[in-house]
Length: 336
Image (cartoon, rainbow, N blue to C red; front, side, top):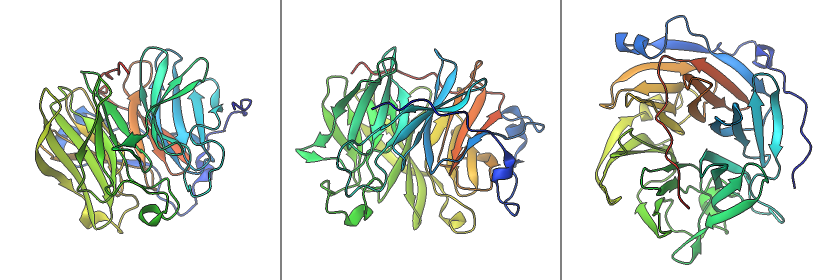
């Protein structure tokens, strides 16, 4: 059911506790100034949500969509209209006993007029018609067992969909009696619909991204004891090889808010990765160029805006934006 639009959610820095650090940019290398100007400022767009994730810029409507996962809602933000309710429920329907976060999480472009979503409540990858709001599950099982709660996804140039499947949507997480998959895996849906588990060795796989040439896959692991971003080589047939730690953020856990989570890549191949302390900017070689902070954990980020040079960030109950000098990698679209 789609509820009526809510009124705009007024942006206000007053929502931040007086003791909280103000949003800021920390440039740690000269090259970082070619990505974010030293005069750029983090702008708060909207707040008052439970936990926001999965920002997606929709070019056709000139607006940002994002998920409030615990509330089972998708909101739409625009410069003129503020933040308004777009869809409720965004994920799980009916009896949601046993779910702690039943809503949609990651959102990505699909076929023209559609988006793809990681649907935690229905435990699958879904397609949503942006006009009719009709919702179709693409896949919700692997080897006959339900996924845990798909979290984030990315589309490759061949139309394949890569996604992570931690148990965060379930009450009790790994201890949930609803959990059916023995591994918290990373999966690939081929253009013909075949599903393959490509990684089964991470405790909490979370964010996922592809390099501009789609030859490198990045996966974040939100494990406080092993808070890393992994990189893999991707063959033209979709096989992974040369698994390696791209960056290890474990030493920062507990000293700064947040864990490795969502990621986005710019056209130069730089990785904007959330982690302890905010959004970290890395070259494709893994060298850190800078960090963007909101004073709280940042869950996810994406590029958008009319010229594609705005970095949108979801941070606990708030949505932020930052103007940059780069654009995000053009999104591939799935044929499913």
